[in-house]
Image (cartoon, rainbow, N blue to C red; front, side, top):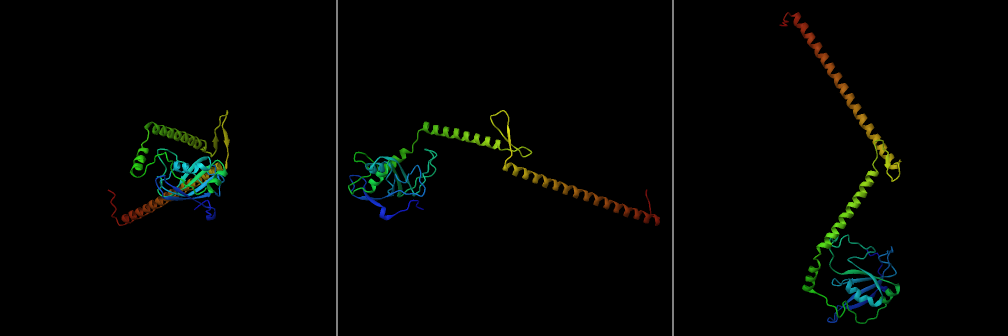
Length: 265
C-alpha cells in the first residue's frame, strides 16, 4: 500500500537519456513526498518521491541527475514505496537479496525549495550518467558485480568480531535481568543494587508468582491426600479379604473334623 498518496495532477514527468550516445529516453515520475508519519530519514517537506526508476539506475545515477536542483543529503532506493527505511545489520551478510525490476527512489534535499525546483524542471536534455564517466552494461556489468562481491578478509573478520562482542554483551545483560527478576522460595523478588544492602520489592508479578506457587502446593497436597486415602482403603480391603479367607478356612477345618477326615500330619 502506498503511504504517500499519488495525485496525478501533482506528478511531474521527467524525460532522461542514459548517456550522450543513446537517443532513447526514459520517463521518471516525480512528486513531493507526503507521508502519514514524518520521519528523520524521509522528511516530508524535503523529500522528492521518484517513481519508475529503471533497474540499471543506482544512487550514483540519481545523484548525477538531480544534483542540479540543490544539495542532496541522502538517497534511498526501494522495491516498494514505504515511509520506513530498513537498515542492513551487516555489510557482508544482507538480510535479503536485492529485488530486480523497476523501483522507487526517495531523494532528500537540504531545502524544500530544491524539491520545488525539481518539480518545476524544464524539458532540457538530461542524462543518468556524466559524459566523462564510464559505466558498464551487459557482460561487463556482470563482471563488475562479481568483482564487487569479493570482500576483504580483514574487514570481514572485524565485522564478525564486532558482532560477537555485541552478542556477548547483550547476552550478559539479558542474563543479569533474568537473575535480577528471579523469585525466592517465598515468592519475593530480590532487586540488586550497588548500595550496601539489597532491596526487596513486592510487585504485581511477584504476587502472581506467589498465588501460582500456592495453588501448585495445594494441588500437590490434595493429590498426596488422595493417594493416602486410596492406600488406606486398599489396606482395609486386604484385611477384610484375609479375615474372610480365615473364616472360610476355619469353617472348612470344622467340617473336616466333624467328618473325621481331619489329618493334620
